[in-house]
Image: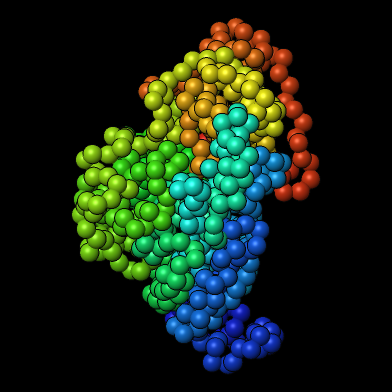
Length: 566
């Protein structure tokens, strides 16, 4: 075997030498020519599916990337990755497969890239778990890579009001409370999602795409483009060209994703009012990259970075509005000028962050109110607070923006699953001042931490978003707002205190003191603990059984390979 050509060091393991004649024979079956073996083998992990509008518009992006990679002198190799629609599975047992899909996506990409000795990979994804799953695989394999976000959905409109998928969830509460007519209920349902693309607010998909752009692993402006627009297709093609350059210059993900670039990503998450799920996913991403990062680092960043983007769910606007106002580069330039961004971090293009932002204005245009001046923010500190106390000694996550009074003490209303809690909410059995507890929904107990947009949306629709607390060892949608605390750790299934709460116990949620407390004396807690019996696993076969057995605590990202020791 001769020395491999630059950029083909990996693929030469399967394309070069006498012994690899059978391997080449299989390539010839797919139309390869002898000269193709001198070019990089470039994987395209294509998340296209017709399961969800988030991913239904990805094939055109894949096709554009294929053409661009061929033109740039690479051999594109497409393979599929699965997805789960959070919006469609929400409120059902199917939602438990959502977080598990993050691991499946990561494993699929790692398997293909490593098993086929690909020289680089372009990952295309839409719905929430596509982004962290793709990034985890990119970091595990550490081959030159670029992430192509599928793009956001356009906002819906009904009777002059902009809509998102969250509008439909909140309409359930409004309708059952008698605050909405059947006509308007149907109108919201039929107009909330007008195009392909991922959910429109600064929910989890757009939060993660923005953070990946901030890390330097996606092209500038790409994270807030709408899926139906031609610029999204053009950006996918450009991403293919950039990837070939990265392969030829051996520009690798672990050169780009460092502790400093993680801080850049989290700064953007705070500035834009991003999803609580970003905490979970960045713990998993940093684990994959072997970067020293803990749940307490989010609190450290929260205290430094204000929220200055007026975006849903607690603000007014959606991702397409942010794009028109200057997109993530505008947000990053403002953070850079304020000393809150590391400008020396490398990007996939080979430029530093500072170089990439050189031509971006220091301040947003004056004729918009999507991006506020950084010295006149919506909130002086970030919105993703890490609460601790006897209920969450390892930490829990609360989104504290948009609340008039982020402090309450109230009686516990205890539910061991989401469905019974939802029934109580819709039946008006939950009243102002209550603290709803939904437990046995953590990484091991759920298993796989289902999101709870249905109950939170219903509470908001019923006008209880400010007056009812909700805590869970599961998690919330990026579209959730209100007095909600998720990721309570340790979870109920492993003996966490959340599993010992009884009906009408007093619970305090205090975002000012970063406190989550069960107001019950130690002797009573000890007596309850002595009588507690761990429930049997809900699943004993298949992916959810594996997830429940292997998952780490939410405070460590709910990853499946954290406790592997050799």
